Image (cartoon, rainbow, N blue to C red):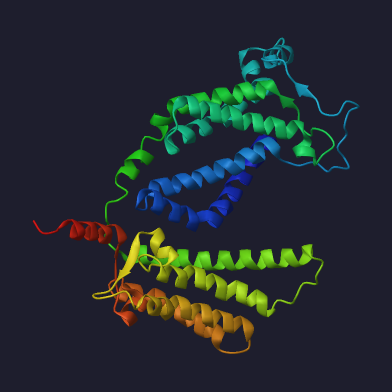
Length: 373
């Protein structure tokens, strides 16, 4: 049973890592789609990550050493006879009793192929809110993609198939997806449905400390991701042009890593619409001033802009105190949120209140509609 158990460990470990990498984007998308955070769908995303990695591990791993893979004279082979597994079970269990037949490798292989795709049907029907037909069809398409990947030797990376592509796998996997779709309402009865959450998407909600913190985390994750993407693109471009790669303290790389993302995450949003940063927009927050929005740029500079400048100077002058100052600023920004009724450090310095953007939009609409009778 060892060969059937180790992919489960890979699925759990790899799924947790995958979920950790995409956790903040998942929460941000959840907020934008449904207008709020829901623990049950958050944990559902974690389960989806684990299942996705486990499915890859069970169907495509381990990858063989190309030097040890022996290809036949005709290359890859495909078992194209439907229900060949019935003959295989009969042949391998000839003379065995009921217990021996049910526990034989041939029987368990078929059962496992069905069970492997039951979670697919459950997730598609109840988590993604697809109907039974689409859930089953998606399982069939996924199984077909897996069989094609096996048949082509990982799409040409190997000289031939390193696993037998089998039409029976497609049949049993599709059956598993159908079973999962049928029992999904019983298994995931507690999972909030997308249509129900979307119906309440535009309802305003209290501005909490956790919501403010989440907006800040999204801002800094976006800052780091954009900086990394810009620097990688810049260096790949240099390699494509045949130029030498500069050192880690290259001025262009530092500008792309810190200043350009800082402008896109903090300053550009301050000039457009509500003046909220990307993270604040993701969680439906916006700053509001008693009179005008002229202090939007000042608010963007108070924490986000200052953080960008300090981190840039710290990278440019690594032996100075800019690095520790950056850490102190982050600490002060996070600590200030619960101590200032969720206004935050930038709100206190610029006189801004943090409000739910949906409530603000509702008030503007009400005000514009209240004309003279």
